[in-house]
Length: 454
Image (cartoon, rainbow, N blue to C red; front, side, top):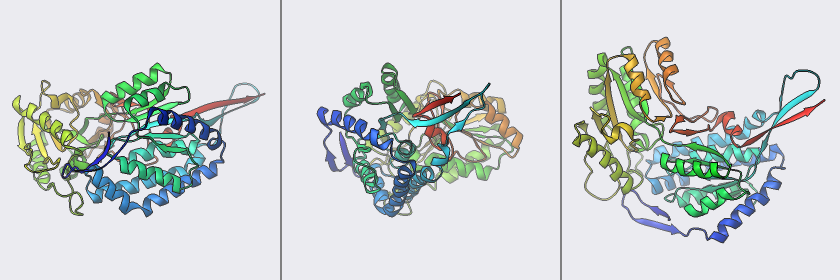
């Protein structure tokens, strides 16, 4: 179940055994035992562990980036950028987190005093994906270690070496034994952990299908959960947009990490007056995103994470073309080994096609032409997802008008939505429940405890 499979060749580099049921149970008991001490540890000491984790990510950047490239195919330059982003998250909570955890004194009616104290709740389970294996672990781990919660982290099956590396970083940074544990758990063991009264919450970043399963288990056992799921982010280009800016953002937003980004620009919704010019410019820009060896510094578009993932994307494209969509570029699975797929552009996608409703987790852009701003808003909101979005127009009032009407968790105004440690990340509808990062990430698995005195 847990193995490093090189996406460029399909070769299995190494395998790891899953836990026995007894080992999985022992890990949860150990996390609960460690919680009693860790939650009572001074906040400054917990913050110091996070500061050292940030420093160790930077010291080991080459090693961590190389593992990311090997295990999920991310171009090495993009992998180093991810290492730095993860480091910045640990650093943010180490330096700004303690102030965010200060008691909040309430303005109450009558006499006396009341305050809210942000306290930990206990052992947590994190279920992490492969597409940003360091960053997405950091945004769950950092705020919760600072709070005083203990962590069981079940990483993606194709990132076992990275998951062990993160555990090693936590240990080297001074996290006490069992405060952070990597668990090579099975699906059945995850369900057993969630059912246990020892576990107090679960966070999943993954597919909508996985979110439904974990959300149902959490609800059944009355456990707090955060679900960061899929997205079909629209990028709306209005008549007064700076097309050079919009085209560049659309290409980066769609093809970065081979399109395997939940907040990737998956739908470009373009106003009729600028449609022809946008399409022409976008196709020219797309043609510059050549696939290549992810270990090469110059490569911008590497393989997908696996052949199975590549085949899923190819089938979505074939379905659209067979039902009448126009294929402008790409769309053919290349010969040879590996999970490569070329940058692909479709238009004329209609509701009977899978590409209209489903998230395409690969380097495929879908372009839509609309005849009004209201039509752009309606089309953007027609998706079952509501994660990120972007609006391009030179008119600030128009940009905010559209942003206010989009059913999403995040909007970029003349820019892509970019993750940053201090800003909340999350969506609505089928894109999930809850928020990560910033002060919001601290509040998800916290006991907002009221202290009242006369």
